[in-house]
Amino acid sequence: FPAGLRADMTVNRETGAALQQKAPLKDLDVIIKDPLEVAIDSHQVQSINRLLGHVEAFGQRDHLLRSRPPEPISKYLEHCSVGIARISLEEKRAELVRAWWRHAVEGIRIVCKIPKSRFNKEDLQKQSRLREKYV
Image (tube, rainbow, N blue to C red; front, side, top):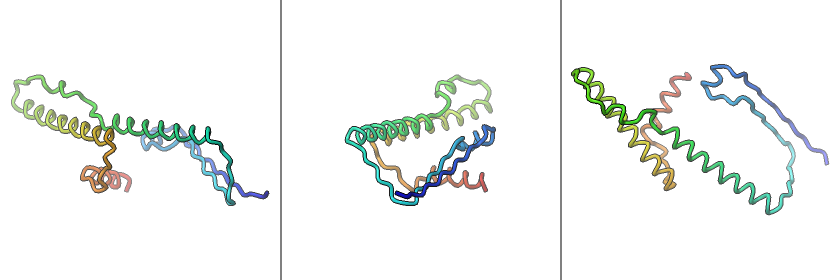
């Protein structure tokens, strides 16, 4: 049977800019112009479902790992005798504690499969900063 197929491949170089933007190194676009029939058996369907489950679990763990603050709270528990440095230390510690609480809440949301609000204040601010960065 005659069928139309078009495949475009884009390859990016491993430059600092590409890695910073997290651009994919290889991208393949396949367009099939006519309907395509595929015959798969139940074992293949089970394998695909298992693979999708692993991909979803990996995505959840990856998201949780990315929301984890980079520093432990214990780093800011040391006492400082200088007044100005102590105030700065207290502010950093308070912000870090807030970040750990946000991480804990995000972990609960992911584990309990609670849907995320579309109009979350922090996400809107992050999207706004990202838009300003690229514009």
